[in-house]
Structure formats: C-alpha cells, structure tokens
Figure (cartoon, rainbow, N blue to C red):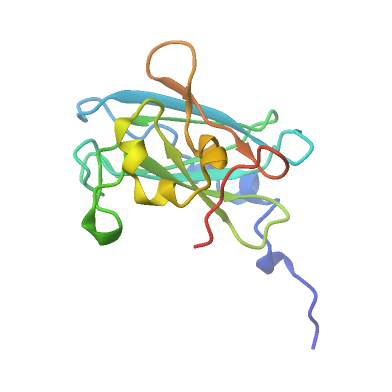
Length: 178
C-alpha cells in the first residue's frame, strides 16, 4: 500500500484552473439592505511573501442576522492575484445567535484554501469599533494579544476595510480548529 499524497489529496495549486468560474466577490446586489463594506487584504506566507494561488471563501448573515435568502446568499469566493490580494464587496452582517443563544458580534466566517495545505484554514473577520466585540463568546476564546488578527482595520474612504491573512510567524492570523 502506498502512503504518498496524490493530487486528489491536496488543495492546490489548481485553484485558478478549475474554480475561477465560481468567483463571487460582489455579494450584495443593489437593493439589499445594509451598510455597504469593501474588504480587501493579502494572504502572506511566513516570510511575508504573497501567496498568489489561494482561494478565500466567506460566509455571513445579512444585515438582520439571517443566513441565506433570495437576494443575499451570504457566500463569496475570491482568488488571490499575483500580489496575494483578495477582495469582497458586501454588507456588514447583523448579529446571530452564538453559544448558549447569546448574540455574537457581527462577523464574517472565512475559509482559506491554498497549495501545500491538506486542510483548509478557518478564521473570522470582526469589525473595528464594534461594541459587541467585547462580549463575543468566540472572540473571548482568543488570547487578548492575538485578537487584533481577527479585527479588520479601517482603510481610506468610509466603508473600506483591510484584513490580511498571515500564515505563520509573529503576527500569525488566528485560525480555528473546526
């Protein structure tokens, strides 16, 4: 019996070949209620170099805290470019029930696929200046000095956020074991 990994057991580097038709960077069409936000970031390896063949997926609730719907699916996918950049244009999600039914802070679930990974990475994006962050049960599980890796930063014009994924090292993004 062979125990060597085969292409069917790895995530990449085939993302740009077979999945580009599934790219969905604009989640909220005109008429969908909610505060418009653009999120842009980079996927960087442990040396700070861009990962040019990652796939970033997001899941989120609508502005009222509901998942799914006819006009707003709450699912997006962006492939990184040569500079490791991904982007999404969406709305700020509403609060959803968390552990024990307590409302969670507005957040976006993130999954990252890329070459060399046998399992996807799971993380979250929280919103800067959001008062509910202080009482979010999941964010509270993260050591205080690492929480900043999950909170996007305001950038440029209103409604524009930056959230980078750092795969290893001192400022490594918090990933959850799901």
